[in-house]
Amino acid sequence: MSSTNTLILAYLLTGLTIGLGHCIGMCGPLVVSFSLSLKGRIFVPHLLYHCGRILTYTILGGILGATGSFAVFAANIAMIQKGAMLFAGVLIVVMGLAMSGWIPRTKIFSINYSPAGFIAKGFGKLSRSQSVIFYLPMGLILGLLPCGPVYTALLGVARAGMEAPSIYQGVLTGMALMFAFGLGTVPALVLVAKLAGMRWLKSRQRIYTIGAILMMGVGIYFIVSAIRY
Amino acid sequence: MVLNCLYLAVFSILLLLAPIAPSIADSKVPANINCEIQKGPCNQTIDGRKVTLEVLPRPVKAMQDLTFKVSMDGQVADGQQPFIKLNMPAMDMGNNRVPLKLNDNGVYQGRGVIVRCRSGKRTWKATVVFPGIGSADFIFDVIY
Image 1 (tube, chains in turn cyan, yellow):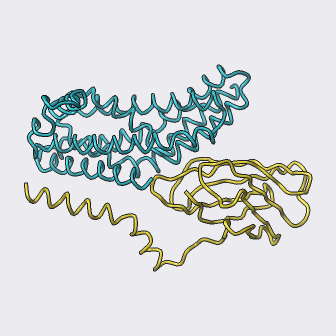
Image 2 (cartoon, each protein chain N blue to C red):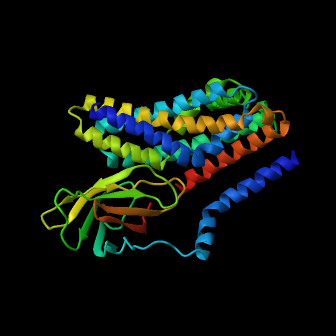
Image 3 (tube, each protein chain N blue to C red):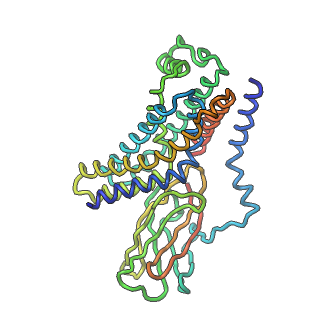
């Protein structure tokens, strides 16, 4: 097995162990809130969420593999991550409000509001929509959240990028490593989501309310974290 | 509806208070920090031998390139490449390893990065490992 393949396997296994420990603790509440708020269909939304998240990791891996410098990445990513955390927090709170039914969906944002017509229409669609495709961009955004183990994985990618014979090879290696890492984190979170979405729990309307509350709590946590970051 | 808003309000208050909760807890539990890395080199022992760790530049900040310098009393056998494992005592942050090489001054030196934790916790652990001899933990606070 080549050294790159060995590294990819190592990253996959690292993702698995990190997923069972760190991810369940930090992102578990988020996936649980998704499961509790989704009435009946949890597999596809979670699959899309993870696809989005892994795609973001893969792109970041390509960037670090090309630049070979974690310090440059760190210097430039902080404000983007802060913004992503704030945006995701607001989005999740709105999702929670819409799914709870406490606020009439058409009251969240009027689709006729201007001049921010584009954004208002977007949120309006979100508040009315039950479309699961929403979870893909959610995953893309949440993949940008500051995360220690992801940073650690990117450190290794940067080192691999520095040692790569060409930028092209560095990009490919970086993308492969972070794809493997992200894939490794999936089983643990899917397990948590599945346990939370078990049918015998969903027979009670109160669980949906708890899910909406949890979702809003997670959103508020992201907003507070973004302010403090 | 009112009850649900109350639940959310209580949860939000608890969430906002959470950042200071560790401070309250820490005041009751002895701190396990054993190194003032921001002030200068720290010492521990491995197998009865003094090991010194210094991290530069100071102040030691997360998310930037750092130079780790390690020295040990006595001889270290050739081929035994020491390294440092960086992690948090409270949370697994992945496999962050800093390989060390002997420089011209007889000090082992390597470059690495202490990453940042979203939780806001700043206490990190540098485990200096000399294969075949032993390891020592240096626990300190970094600046975010």
